Amino acid sequence: MDIPILKNNIEAICEKIENAAIASGRKRDDIILCAASKTRTVEEISESAKLGIDMFGENHAQELEVNFDAGAYLGKPASFIGHLQTNKVKKVVSRAELIQSVDSIKLADAIDSAAEKHGIIQDILLEVNIGGEFSKSGVFPEELCTLLEHASQKDHLRICGLMTIPPICPEDEARGYFAKMRELFEKAQAHNGGNIDLKILSMGMSADYCAAILEGSTMVRIGSAIYGPRNYNK
Ligand SMILES: *Cc1c(COP(=O)(O)O)cnc(C)c1O
Image (cartoon, rainbow, N blue to C red):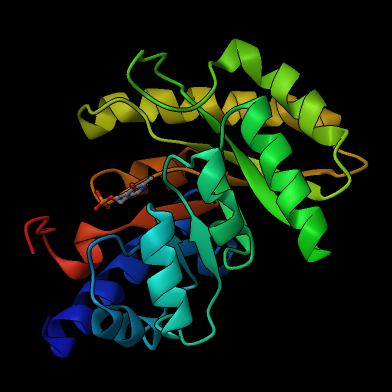
């Protein structure tokens, strides 16, 4: 991808983030820009790392491994945002500063023991299926409390917030889901203390990140608006 285009895209996104942040009583630096780098090359990723990306998000353990080990992120933090199978946890724990997609007790347990082996405390977000869709990952809102309580017992986890991917819908409809998520986030913050320190609300992608910020998102995960359309056939 053309570097000037990449630069323009990221500048335009940062400006929109700033405007939405201000409109919601915050500032640009209150919002973390996480680049969703699935399918992108090491070169594309490292060029974008020079241009105002705060963090990277990978969907596949294999891509995280390749990109991290190649130094593609130029020292910027990496996170994991995809569905994580327990047998891939080992690859992810040593590389991702933040695992955004924890949605089961089994996965929380697997991450905790991998983190213990590495002698670290792993930062995680709990993923919520805010639209209640059967085909989607994430816990249903009514299951969140149980997962939060379970994870709070784990010595090698720090629960830093919540993440969601709303149903595919127009931005104004998505805004309703973001508002629900924010309510849930604020309720869950009543549990802060011990290893629960909920301050990240990760929501908003290319099509709807402004709406998400207006509803209180503190982290947006953006792919195609940064790098252009994805090509899965490469
Ligand atoms: C791909 C992806 C994104 C970014 O999607 P875009 O629409 O390309 O911005 C965000 N979050 C997750 C979990 C993703 O898999």
